[in-house]
Amino acid sequence: MPHLVLSLILYFSFCNRQDSRQPPPEGSGGSTPSPYEHIFAQHPNYISDGFDFPVGKPDAKNYYNAQKFGKNTHLGDDWNGRGGGNTDLGDPVYTVANGYVSEASDLGGGWGNVIRIVHKTPGVSWPYVESLYAHCDKMLVKKGDWVLRGAKIGTIGNNNGMYYAHLHLELRHTPDLPLGQGYSRDTSGYLDPTDFIRKHRPKK
Ligand SMILES: [Zn+2]
Image (cartoon, rainbow, N blue to C red; front, side, top):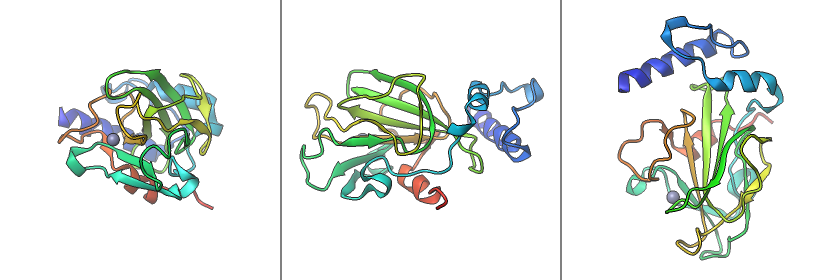
């Protein structure tokens, strides 16, 4: 399985280097082109131009990351308001980059309301990156929406009182992976959100 993933990464990286505006050649190498090639080709204004933080836009001002990626096998970041407790309940959540909303639904369990957004990322090591925002109090977007970096997509929630309010943010370099559990020793497919955002800020 790791070999397949590596092959896909190499394949897409190669295509990306050739010309990110061209869809990958049909049937080449036995790989299937991403279904997102087609829809982003029709919405070029929503191709990513860089990443910002999802709270306190654009730099996470007045927020802190209470549980960083990798700590306790956490697969994301937990963004909290500096005031602590539920003081950030209802605060705005912003999309980290331009993209396509691939999901916005109540997934229950420990997840609650989850928004997933696919970003087409020319010039990045992966052709697409997905951001996932969990435990939202309100969701202001729906599947199929297009969003521009910094747009308010929802609000910080506490999953019906299960937690103190916070935003669980994941970044994945392969869109549409299974939802997962939020924690795992196996980080394949996941990116350190803060590290990635810092390294891919928009050009001023
Ligand atoms: Zn979390």
